[in-house]
Image (cartoon, rainbow, N blue to C red; front, side, top):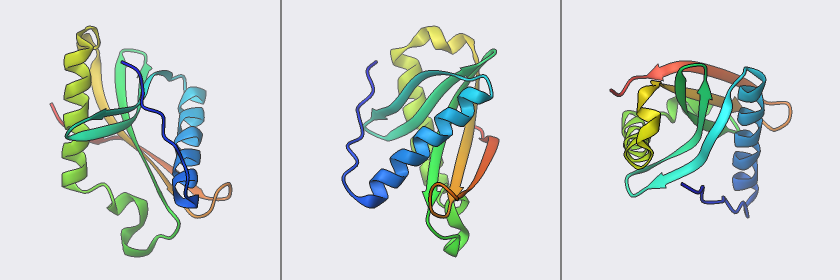
Length: 129
C-alpha cells in the first residue's frame, strides 16, 4: 500500500508535516521501524504505522500552536479515535500479514512553535480491538 504524499502548502500544513517528521524521527530513536505513513481510507487516516518488537503501532500526530481549549490532547476526540480505528481496520484488511502482531494506538502531541515546542508521547492512548 503506497502512502499518499502530503502536500504542505499553508504554514499550518507545513508545521503539521514537520510534526509528523519529528514524531517519526523520535520513534525511530526508540527502535520503531516505519511500515507506512498517511494511510487513508474513506472513513479515516493514520499518520504513522510502525513496528516495535511484536507490536504494530498506529500513531496519531497532533500539533497545536497553543494549549488553549485543552491543546493537542483534547483534539483526540472519541470521533477522531473511531476514524483512526477505521483506518487501522482498513490497513489490516489490505495487509493481513500484519494481523499476527499485537496492536497499539499511540498519540504523539506537539504544542508550541517548532522547533522549541513541547513534545509528549502517549503509548496505548486508546484501545480498539
